[in-house]
Amino acid sequence: MGSAVYLVGAGVNQEVRNWDGLCPPLIGDLFRVAAKMRRFQGRHDQLNPVFSYINRFWKMTEDDLAESPFDLEECFTLLDLQLVDAVAAGNRDTIAELQTVIFRLKSLLASVLKDFELHALSSDVMRHFGARLLAEKPVILSFNYDCCLEAVIELASMPNINIPSAFHGGSARETEMPDELLAYSHYHWNRTLAYAQRFDKVQLRQAGNSQYVEGERFYSVPGNELYDWYILKLHGSLNWFRYLPIRRLPAYIEGEVPFTPELAGRALLVERDWWLGEPPDLDGWYLDPIILTPVLHKDRYLSEPLYQRVVAQLWRKAKDALQSCETLVIIGYSFPKTDFHTKKLFLEAFADHTLKELIVVNPNSSAVKLAADLCHLASPKVFPQLSDYLAA
Image 1 (tube, one colour):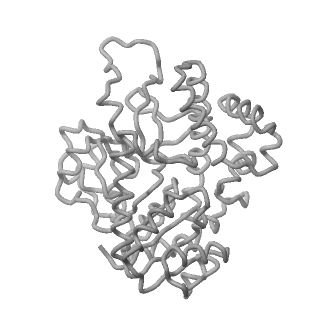
Image 2 (tube, helix red, strand yellow; image 1 turned 120 degrees about the horizontal axis):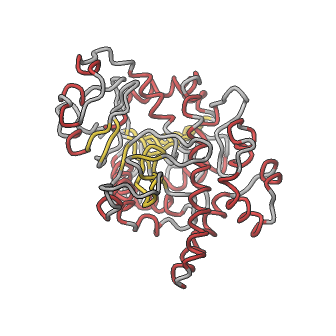
Image 3 (spheres, helix red, strand yellow; image 1 turned 90 degrees about the horizontal axis):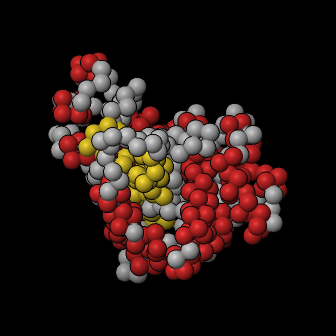
């Protein structure tokens, strides 16, 4: 493990713009950003349960949401608490209604963020940042769902022109795929190996190829060992999924595989998009992104078996990384008052460990002070913007 750790929050993406001049949404901007995106305009059938729910409890209409900030954390937290109450009361109708709102709201968040990943590649600042990370090879702690960091690190690593001959042979069954094909990725840096964990099913990182491979087979191939510098995505990721017990085509198909506990417990590493508000699917089942939605209390999420296996263990690795690093670079993260889970991580990591250097990239002086207090280092180096830090 290297001596430097980078902690990256949502603020890192604020220098990314698309052709409409939009920023990736922060916690209060989701609906305002979505309202300006062409593909969400006039396509609200899937979001009607969300708009009805918000109107009931916050008295805000769809037009209000398009113009005014709205606190997603407060909304997700209320939904979460109401779901706990409904489960305790055994109220199936209310459970179903709340789960629908949660899923539709989470899908909106995921689909909006997904649209910004390509724009990161057109940002000079983000490309420069990707090259810096690839050169330094630090451990990266990220609270972002999107894969912008992965995209710019891949780009910096350059396309892999050592294409195996089997790549041109077309689709093949997994049992027929040679090791050289399974070890090939379109870029030299392969995000599949960068998450400090093995998934149960992975999609090969190959241009124009949608081949899927069982994780046990993929990670057993020489060259597919996990990287020793990695991205710990502590709130999950938009390319991490689990199966939902809902068929994309609900009609019974003779011989189809039933939804089983084993299927429910599988973690999938695949690239998927949300089209017209419709959730992605794989193997005939709808998929649910493995992300910690912005709720006040995250312990219930982290106690679920799949989240315990996929996400909770990343927090343990993050603590180890913080306890052993000499330099910590905090970019675009302001330690919100409601996220005590992260403050706990810092308080424990730096109880008996002292940094040599703290760098904070944030224009918010309060966020800088809070970071310094949590790390017990009085004089951090401060840069207002990512571009300033990269130019230093």
